[in-house]
Structures are given as C-alpha cells and as structure tokens.
Length: 283
Image (cartoon, rainbow, N blue to C red; front, side, top):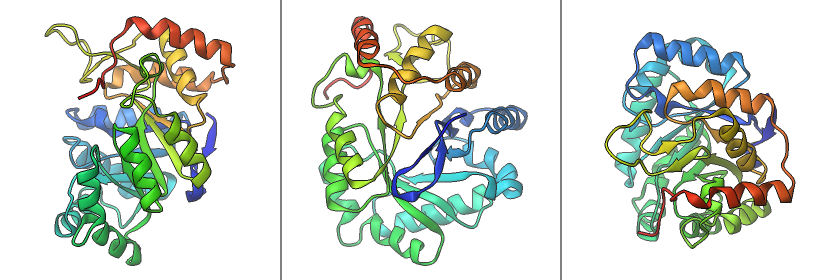
C-alpha cells in the first residue's frame, strides 16, 4: 500500500487510515481481526477518539504490544484546559500507551468553539503542556466546515487537519462542502491532510440500515474504487476507513490498486454523483 508524507510531521502515512470508529460496538475478537487485516495490508496510521464507544479499550491490548509500529492519532471533544487534560490522561490510560503521535481537537465546526479552544483557559493550553511533557508530538484539528478550518490553520500552526472530502460533496459545492481552499492553504502551510467520508453516498433513506455507519455508504467495489481514488487524487495524505468493518476489505482492495485520476475522470465521477444528496447540507 502506498505511503504519503503527512505534512510537516514527516510521517509516511499509509493512504488508508484505521478509522477506529468502526470498533464502536464490536467484540474483542472482531477488533483483533480488524487490526490484523488492516496492519497486515500496510495500514500504519490509527485514528481514535474517546467518543468512539469501546474503540480505545479494544485497541489497548494490541497497542500495548505494538505501539511503535503505528502512527497513533487521538482526539478530544473537550474545549477547556481542565477538560482536555483529563481527556488526554484518560485516553493514554485506556489505550495503554505513554504518548500520542498526533492529538486533535475534535469536531470544531464553528468559530465560537475555535475561539474557546485557542483562548485563555482553552484546551490548547493543556495540549501544549502535554506536548512539553512529551505526551504527544503533533497537534491537529478536525471538523466539517471548511471556512472554520481555514481560519484555524491561519491562527495556529496546526500540523494536520481532518475533514470530509468526497466526490458527492464535490458534486454539491457550496460554503459547507467546498474544501478546495482548505486544501490549497494546507499545501502552502505544509499541513498534513486526512480525509473522512470518502465513501459516503447520502443520508439514510428510511429506518432500515444495512451498515454501521450514520450515513448510507457506497458498497460495491466499482463505486468504492471511484470514491477512494477521487479523494486520494485531490492531494490528501490519507483517507480514513468507514465505520463498518464489512466495508474494509473493499477499501483495502481499492487502495492496493490505487491510481491517480486525470481531470476528465474526476469530472465524470463528480457528475455521476450529482444524483445523491450530500450528508453535510448547509445548517
């Protein structure tokens, strides 16, 4: 599997990231099988958060033995210094590790929240102290609103940014779905880019959900090829695997056959996706 440089972190991340949200409600055996599958195919970047159900607990036993073989990224949804410190300590304990390679402010979707995090007594103060104590190496931010993330990387030297990027979003460009300016700014500032929701098709229609994802995903190999290849043709470092383990073999297959798409192919894939409703419409 291809590896790409994650911005100024200098880490060579696999083009697929282990999206630990898929471990939300799985057994220990299912978690072990997922780890073996992903790592066995070259996935070397793990993304987890305390809000992902049992994910930290499921990853802990494996990380305790194999910590140095992966790039470990964690998150916090806390906005205050005190809350962030508690979150850092709890995640280190649950994951059975002594440091994170990347620690991210999770789901920052409005400027008011960003102001709190970066302001006096905000979560950034705890994260900077933790970095001084070598509990984490790099600092990132995640969110669903491109204009908020552009503001964030202009105000602080974030090492990475994580955001949705898909051909369906590209087919419905507006201030909430157009991440082109963020990609351009990230390249200029050497910020590592991590994409999510690459295989999101549309919001679920009805109450019957066939997959453990909060959106309806693409599930045919040909469609997943198009989705992943489109996202990875935008210059991002890596794309997180979706929240249902049954889709992972398809993503891995697509990644191992990855090829860059030319502009005409990308345009065709975006045009084809206009029939679907994006999962992030304007609020």
